[in-house]
Image 1 (tube, rainbow, N blue to C red):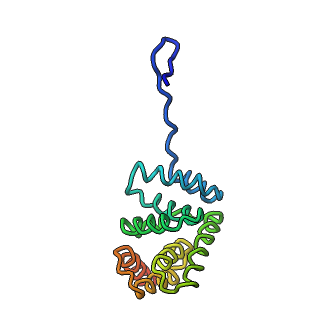
Image 2: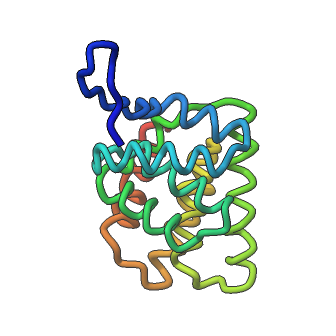
Image 3: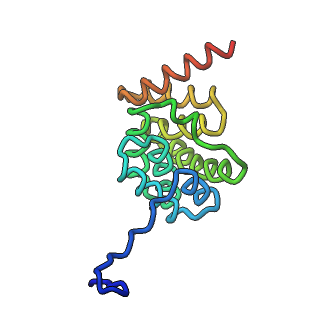
Length: 167
């Protein structure tokens, strides 16, 4: 369909602007999980190395009961830059959402203590909640159950380095 201006020149409607990463996090904190998921996915579509958006996909997909894409996104984020977890914004509303996502994986671990995907997600989400020792315990347990992935090893190394720096 063509659009015309007053002079008869064809004018195509502009596509809506992509949301900013800050807008996507705000949507997630407002519990607008589908809107947040679309925003984070749009950001990754524009830049596949947008690690903060991949983390956002992981959290929003978890809360939309899409655990496989959530785990895939978190693994990709950790593979690219595990330190990106430290750049996720904090705030009471967002912390509540992250805690809710953490509950999903805590239940999975309760059912299967060797669930390496749930242990990795738990480690990442615990770190987002500021629980460095809990994050270390979870990723170390995942590696102990056979998760020899680069993302698990990178996260554990980052946590070891961070815990060493704290003391």
